[in-house]
Every structure is written in C-alpha cells, then in structure tokens.
Amino acid sequence: MIATAECHPGDDVDSSEPTLSPEQAEAHRHLILFLRGLSKLDAALGRWRPDYGRLRASAAAAGPPPSEADITEAHRLYAEGLRYFADRPGIARTLRMAAASDIAAAIEDSIIRFGAPIAPVEWLVSPAARADVQAPGERPPAVPISEADILAAGGRVALSPWDAERSTPTPPAGRGAPVRRAPPPPPRGSEPPPARPPAKPPARRGSGTDGPPGQQRGRRAFLVGMGLAALLVLILLVVLAVFSAKYLLGEGPTAPGAVASPAQATLPPSDLPSGSPANVLAPVSACKTLPSGQVPTGIALASTTSGIGTDPAVGYSNPFITIQMKGAVQSSTPAFSLIAGVLPFNSTAPSSATASATSGPVDRVGTLQLIAYWNGSQWHGALRNWSGSAWSLSVDAASGVDIVQNGPAITLYWEGLAAGDKYGVIVASSTGCADLELSSTLVPEQNYGATPTP
Image (cartoon, rainbow, N blue to C red; front, side, top):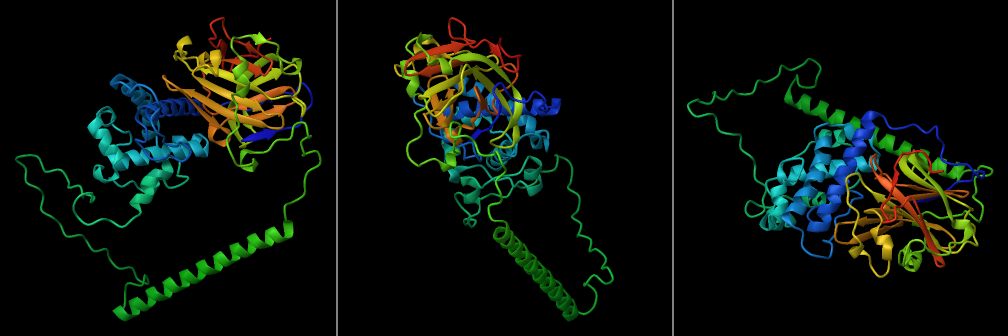
C-alpha cells in the first residue's frame, strides 16, 4: 500500500509517536520468530499447510533439497514464536488485527490436523509423514476447536482451503472418515464408577416448560416467531439506514489542502492498472559494484533514521526506516530504487557466491530487503527475502511494505522490523549506485531504532 503526505521541507516522522509497551514488544518479537520460521518451512517444504489469511503457502524454492537440520532449525523458530501465543490466549490482540488473525488460523489448523497447537517437527522431517500432511484425506483425527478459543487467539479473517473442506458433508464411515476419540481406559486394578443418569433440572414457573404439552409447543412457537420478526425488522432498519446515508452524504466533502501535489501523487496498489508487477529491480542492473557511476544529486543519500510510528496507509503503528535524500522526488525525477538491506539479529549475510548477474552485489546486502521503487510517476513497495539458497520477491500489496514521501524523506513501513536488526541503504539509478551504513564488505551496520546518522 502506498500513501503520500503533504509536509514542509525538513519535516520527518513525529518523534512523539507512542512506543510499544513491554507486552507489545514481546508479542511482536515472537511474531517475527513465527513469521521467519514459517517462511523457511515454506521455502523448504512447499505447500505443507493451507493459507493463513495473508500468509500464502507456496511451492518449495528452487535449489538443493533441505536437510533435516535445516527443517528442524526452521521449525524451532516457527514453534517458539507460535507457542508463545498458544500458551497466552488473547495476547495476539496486542498486534495488528491481520497478524492476530494469521496466528489464530495457524493455531486452529494445527489443532485440527495434529491435535496440538504447533505442527510436530517429526511430521515435517519425515517424507512419509509429509505425504500425509499434504493429502487432506490422510490427516489424523480432527480435534474440534471452539469459537471462543479462536476469538481468544485473535479471530479469523477468511476461511482457508482446509476450512472450506471441513464445511462439506461428513463422508460415510471408512477411509477418510473422522474418528471419534474415546476416553482413556481407567488404571489397571480399578473399576470404573457406575454410570449415573443425568439429573433432570427442575422446571421453572413461567419458563414455558410447565403446563400441558400442547400449551408448551404453542409458547415455544410464539417466542420463536417473535424473535424472527424482531430480527427481520432490525435488518430492514440497518439496510434503510445505510442506503439513506449513502444517498444523503454521497462521497463527502474533501478537506482543503488534503489533495497531494502532482509531484507527489500516488495510487494505492488496488487502483493500479492490471498486468505484470512493477520491475522494482530494474535500476539495480547498473550496480556492478558499490559504489559505482554517478547518482543524480537530487536522490543522493543524506541520512537515515528508524523506529515505530503511525503508518498512514493502514492507520496502525508500524516499524519504519526513513531515508533522507538531498532533494525531493518530483514528477521529472527518473526511475530509481531505494533498498534498505536488513540483517536480522544473529543472522548471517549471503556470501559473494550468491550474487546474480542481474542484481550483482545487491544480493549480498542482508537477508531481508525493503524496496521503495519510483517508476517516474508513482511509488511501489516491495520485499525480498533470502531463504538460504534463493531470493524471493513480493511487490506492492503482497509485500506488506508501505511507502510514504514527506518532501525529501522517504519512509518504508514494514511490521517485520525488530530490535537487534541492523540495516544499510542503497540507492540505484540508471547512471550509478551509492550506499550508506554498509561496511566495505556490504554488511549492514546501522542498528534499527538507533538515533539518526549525521
């Protein structure tokens, strides 16, 4: 999602933005563990799970097959992050609703298929077990999860493919039919207590249960009819109110000064023309080395800062990296890319052998890359993720990266940034490339959340 805000030169992200509480920060840290572990498992196993809201399952990444140690390490991150939320019902509500829904979907799916809130690692490292995981008819017995449990974990956004399958009629007994779990047998040497008939609750006077059977049925039918009539009247009132508001208010007035200048006007991804995604890495092909060539003066890098602030594209607080340039992007500014390379805490950067002919040394900068691409008329956000063997790329809405321009300051919002991460910045145009906060070996050096660079 893209947003543009009017401001005066020199304005930056408001330093008075509220910071995360210790509980929110801890929940966010475990969310990042879950997302990174899930991403690594997806890259290794392919479609081993259904879609969790925004977290789409995909085919396995190209390259050599993962080892058991790779899958175990990825499962450790996934399990450590997800177990935090499974053990603390309701803690996911401290996150954004979309993230909380993804967590709830992952927990629900695992409970249904494995009888536990986290997929067991032995199912993922065993090829035979993975074949069972991928075949819906071969899943273990289903364990129902209550609506209260789902809401406590943060709620759901949409049905996953597995949910849609469960909504179909129950198959006859036999292969693939759900199996009812029996209670465990009593300890040896002890006899089970005799079964007691359920006690019948006493009837309350005036409750509709006293009187002759015909009178009871008449009262129930009357109460049901009254409830349905009241519900129908309520629905009609709501529909009438919505259409009246649309007719009377229309689109609503536009506040003075709320329209961005032509030099800064952008469109959200949903309004962009359909077709192939933007080629956000096109300017990178000129970066045979870093630095190289001559970067236009207006887009030269000046400084960086980072922290947590309100993301105008979604209205929530999100982590951000702001890149201050020496000039403001105008409608006449040629296409270029800003790349914030992120090296998560305790991660190892890709080696020089991973650099491709297209992206060159940029492939060696961090294991996550937030990209702001200016195509000459509008901004595009993108995210690159290093799986350990290949880079993957998501563009615009699928990336989760929001771009906001405030004069010469370009801010990249992304919920995956966390304390302990390091980052550095690259600007790439058709005439040259430059970097800021990268070592001579292209390792990010700036601490996320630190004070601005001079």
